[in-house]
Image 1 (tube, helix red, strand yellow):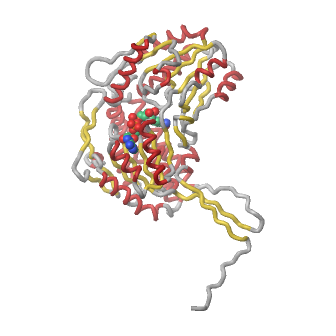
Image 2 (image 1 turned 60 degrees about the vertical axis):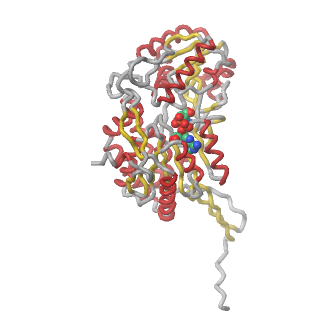
Image 3 (image 1 turned 90 degrees about the horizontal axis):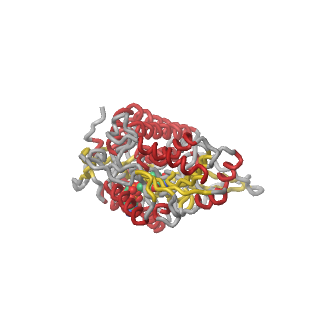
Length: 489
Ligand code: NAD
């Protein structure tokens, strides 16, 4: 039985520890506003200790056999899976997400550890090379060292898995900085590391806010930074990485479009549009928060979307009848309410929602604003809440112009009965993930990342593992033999 006290501390060098100054962070349950308990809050000294532990462990872990890494990743997956009900409950309570979504979060994380376990079993991929005449050349991938992994609060188990699993598979050791808002599920990774018998220092977990994160990104012994979060913080992380030329992966925000053509089944389309903005209360980086709908069906689709929004059931995330949770943090609630006020100032046409729900918890009503001009702040800025804005188009080029009218490039969806037209639209969209006639399917062997302001670098798949490596090329004459050591003193 894992000690719940342990999983409220920092995990450094295979030991659970209190913060060096005894500081704690109080964690709030967003559905009730009550506290869920406290976790240790990492100081700069704690971060230093975690990075040092990871640095000491790197020499051996980077040389470990591929089977060792594969076995460890599988054992982490086994541990998380074995505690499924408990970790799902923790995620649902800490994030406020409905229990079915918390289950998906855990299942996705487990699948990710298993996937990278399989990749690790194959060893690091070699890089094909055409050698110059008379030479033998070998190119190989080497792990980058201590990986600083910084994650947000919206999918704690999954975003951590997308970084921890490929980093370990590549031979990096890690310091994971869990979000100060939702650390409870990720802290179980410490117990998973112990269960997997990982050597001391291979996995370290600290919890803290901006100061803790900033100190980690500036640490001289960090060899790779992988960051998922907002654009504002991403810019700071990139500056820190630039100071020491540390490779960095940035998974940032989005304002993704969903184009719906007139020839689709309206109920099918409404389900996909609603699911892609109201899941996790809209706190999804790839949420398709801008609907671009063909004019002929705009009214009919709007009315179906309003019906779906108003049918969502808000309540206790652990109650299976709940289909819309609260916003996860008080700061996020304040931000969404600010956009309700901006919408009122801008005179946007509200079809439904736009209010905070009175009573305990950080609930807002699912919201739709129709025929929003592209100059509106609600059209241009990431809200990260259950807020959909819509615009109409009359011809394909207009749909694409509206969809592409953004600095972001994370996701995009096309729903269209005409396969050829759908393919043409998909080919014109500049986004890291384009979904055609489907909801947002994400899988470990796939690819995740953005264009433009949504960041750069890719997670998942082989690219996700390669991001934790760099290439060493060794060249020698084909016939070369080492000169004999000189006999002279
Ligand atoms: P955030 O940027 O406020 O925080 C992200 C993480 O960075 C947290 O762990 C935070 O403690 C840490 N941090 C804060 N200041 C730091 C600093 N100066 N240096 C280093 N770390 C620091 O983001 P958030 O509010 O937690 O998450 C929401 C944002 O994340 C949204 O913009 C969303 O689009 C984005 N996101 C992107 C993806 C993706 O895959 N592209 C996935 C999930 C979330």
